Length: 371
Image 1 (tube, helix red, strand yellow):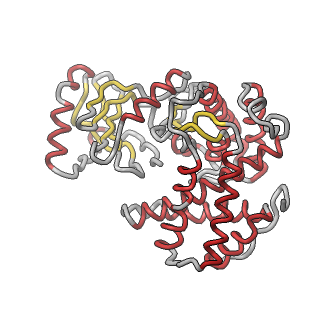
Image 2: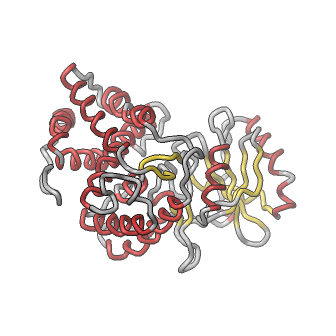
Image 3: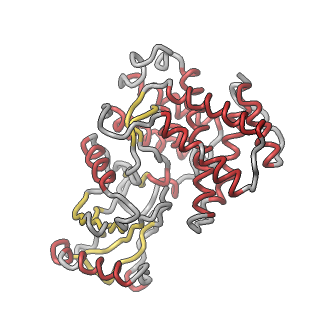
C-alpha cells in the first residue's frame, strides 16, 4: 500500500533525498550517470515522490524537456522487482495505463519509470459529495474490467486457501496480540477459527480472475489531461483469485469511506459490466451473473477477509516497521468488519467478541438486514 505521489515542487524548493547508507547512495549515482544523457535528466531535481508500506520508495526527477520521470528504489535484499516487471507487462498488454519501464538494474534494485502524474484519485474525492465521485469510480470500474478480461490461469500466483489463511492470521497475530495485547482463550480461538473457515469458503466459491490486490484510490492516478485514462500503480502483488477482491478493495477503501447507497450503485454497475464481459455467468453454478444480491454478499465476505488482513498489516507496520500513520486508519477497518459481521448471523459470535475486545456498541441498520 503506497502513499499518494506528492505534487512536484519547484527545483529550488526540492529537499535533499536521504539515503540509508553511503554504499546505497554510491550505487544509485553509478546507475543514474549513464541514464542522464540518454533521458536528458536533471539530477539536481531528484526528490521524493511517494512512500510505500514496503521497503520500496519512489523518487521523481525532471528532464530537460520540462517533464518528469520516476525512480524506483527497491533494495534487492528486501524487495523482488520481477513481479512488478511481469505484472507491468500483463497490464500494459491489457491496455491499462501503467508506468513504462525505461531502465532497470535488477542487481541494484533501481528502475526508471515514466511518470503518470502528481495526483492520485483519492486527492480529488470528497465523501460528502458522492455525486462528484460517480464518474471517476465508473472509470475505475472500466479499468478493472479490462484487467480482468485479460485473465488466464497459470500466469500469476494463485490466491488459494493457504494464502487467504496466512493473511487472516495477521489479524490475531498482529492486531489482537501485538497491538491490543489480547491473548485469546479457547472459546475465542474457536470463534475466530469458525469465522475464518466461513470466510475462506465464501472467498473460494467465486470465479477467479487476475487480482491487482490493492485496487484502491491511492493506487489510481488521476488523469493528467481531462478525459485521459486513470493510471494504475502498486500492482506488484497481483495474483489469480476471487473476482470479488478488487471491487471490494475499491469500494471499501483503506483511506476513504462511502455510504452504502453509493457502494451498491457502483458495485451493481461493475456486476453488469462483468456479466457482459463473460466474467461471471458460466463459470459458476451459484448464479453470480444472475443474482446481484448473491454477488454483493460475496463481495462483503471478500471484503471481510481483506479488512481483517489489513488491520493486522497496519498494526505490523506500526509495531515492526515504525510507520504509525497506517494504524491511524484502523478504526475504519474495524468499522467495516463490524458492519459485515453484524449483517450475517453466522458471524454473530465474531462481532460479540470484537465488541468485547474493542469496547464498542453493537452495530445497527444495514441495507440487507441480518442473514
